[in-house]
Image (cartoon, rainbow over all chains, first blue to last red; front, side):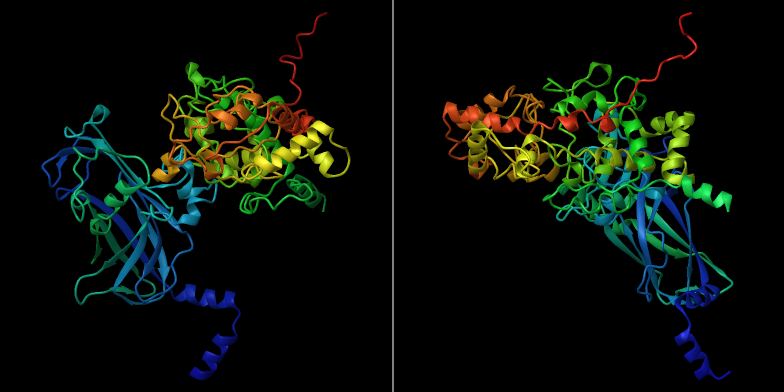
Length: 244
Length: 338
């Protein structure tokens, strides 16, 4: 069969058949998430960490939403399922199918788009049971950090950072763009699983762009200027690595 | 073939929301992804009247939203929650919610389906958490059956619970008062009511827009900052221009929804009108521009206006058994007297 004829056949194939062809040729990408502070994997409750301002803290919860995953070089989001809730206290793996090729990077939304914030009761990652929905002021908490710190003036020396907000002017959803180093690339080929690690370094949370001192900001509980100030540090939290 | 027929009978029966003649279209995202069905409505009604949804099993949605009072807490400025707690605002009427985009006095709630999460989890209302509610529902075979009938094999879920509640509360439509009958040409108004209606249109309908008797906006109507330091809409928007603004309430069944205002601080309709005549705090920066000069009205006109407001009482809604708790089942059938 000539190449020309094959191209013509592809053109007249019904969409569903095209999808099947694409599926058959797709490679697999496995993304896992790791979380560290002070250069070590986060241990909840028991380990004490220190931020850039010399404030000690313990971590009780670290959870956040990501979605709209894209790879650089492909326009469309590469997975139908829009949102994942990453809980640093567990293992988090996302498996994606995508066409073979060499990609320079990956991007995702840290947070939830505004329409999904106003769509009523939802299921899966967006189920209100996940304790990431503000019941008294509708909307999702995009990023939740809870813990304790001797620098906190709040009740029980809490750190309670619930960062969210989807309305114009208060929107803290951030697109995070991550690239692999230098000349290397993320290579996807069929019949092979390519593994990536997205690493969150909590050290950058406190001072990447805006200084977040626990003594000054032990609690952030609603959308607004404070949440925006904290969200400015989001992009610097993450790095991307290809697992050899 | 027989099993096919049975499967068809097991399908939930779709319902159509009846839109009263001349009314605007309801919120389009309300029942688009939540098909109104008889089974969903009945499940929502059961949940609405079930006190097990609260922490101590004593408070249901209906405790504070009583049908005979237009779904407010009758004769209460504030409502009671678990552990003798009090709310800090007057329970709003659950009526014509399908035409409301934002709920609560401050508009904090952006969709009817997520509204129940607020009273369910508030420590001064039902004081419960969602995980615990799910456990209680899953233990009950009646709920297992009703969720299956309404939503198929998905089982009991928070999403199903919230969608069912929205099917019930979103169906609470009041559109058969004397006012509606007069508008439809079925009944005439008395002379008092006619004069009151004219006064209403001249002085009130700018905010209390017909036929819902609200424009769903947030406005400061000149009440003082109350003892809870409740700044209203500003708490949600973070905008100082929204200080002391609260949602304009619809006036359907207003005769029965006393006391009035976001904090229940005004007891009677006569006193409400007195507030607009001479009680407005005109020094407030965010006071609604339409109230800067207060409202001039004679005592006789005040009476006429109240007569008109009484025409918004819809007894067919207040007594509709479809919206009520239903018949109470006898506790134990075997305990008959000999």
